[in-house]
Length: 231
Image (cartoon, rainbow, N blue to C red; front, side, top):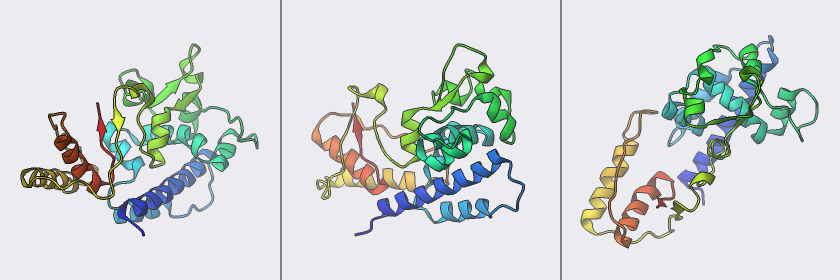
């Protein structure tokens, strides 16, 4: 049976593949007439139940177009073997060359030095990892593992949070909520689903450690296609 979650997963993969194809043309500096990837991306995003991972991440961290493309270039080496071959140009994706900030400035439009500042989102939130020491512009870059999983649509706990939080899968038949909790869950779901596309998502705090609070969290996460995480 097809569910909203599986449909979103397929659409997210299609969005990511189209984004990598667009980025590959930019990196290759292909001057041939390009397929209308931007329109394809807009159409895909418009029909999705929630924004694709790349757009959600871009909005959540306030990334510029250059920062988004730089992060996608690094993640693409992990996600797509053909993209890795195209980027490193060696014909061998088994050990692709890592992009550098200098190489990104040379091939990606809208490049700006501030993208790699310690206070900028890519480094402040550890979306990118730098292999240092050495010249900053020559330091190999890689996308954080959690970012790669997120872009692929895979929900995992960040390795740095293992032992601190646990993920509980939403049960096929969630526990029946008390009427007051059902109303709270409905309000929370509406707060998320009625937010403007790619706007900052609401922050909802549930206080308590008993099973009823866990059931409430599951009652919110389930309709949104997520599994709740607990400390």
